[in-house]
Image (cartoon, rainbow, N blue to C red):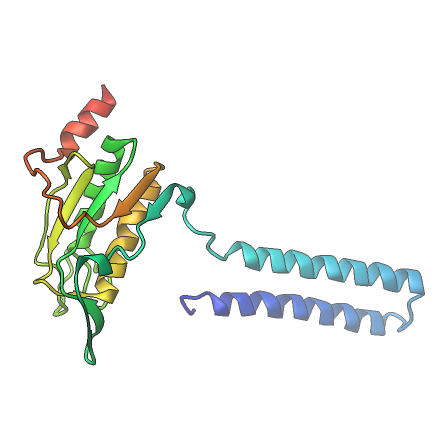
Length: 216
């Protein structure tokens, strides 16, 4: 089966086409004649079946993450952080090791979501693939992902990608963070930290302390 589900869609289409064919054969064998009322009834039933099939197929199409409208991403979040380059071997990118800032009225949940995302970012390759935890690969992945820091502007992380970020890696990083923020069901904005901003890294987020506080 193809990952885009096209084989599954084709099988459903063939099933309904075959069903229509069976009806036609059955009607030919049992007399070959239908009055206009029966013909209209048959066509109405067949139309209904086709609509049901189309609805079933459409329901398999991803609709996006629930609550995605609550999470926004700053325009040009990656290109703001470095100069663009284009390498024929690995494609486009920027001269930066990206950092990410989350602004949210629910700071603890935002920090928890960013923490979960940070655990995944270290497995993102420069080709934009998220490797399974514990797997090995010759592909480049970030050298370092910082802990989450609670700053005056919100939860914040920085990375070390040797000062070079491929577009594929950067886009995948953003997707992962957005996914975790959406899963937290909070309103949040993901942005690049202002270039002139010097965040205080004194307050590191503790996921264990946060979980304990939520249970009390």
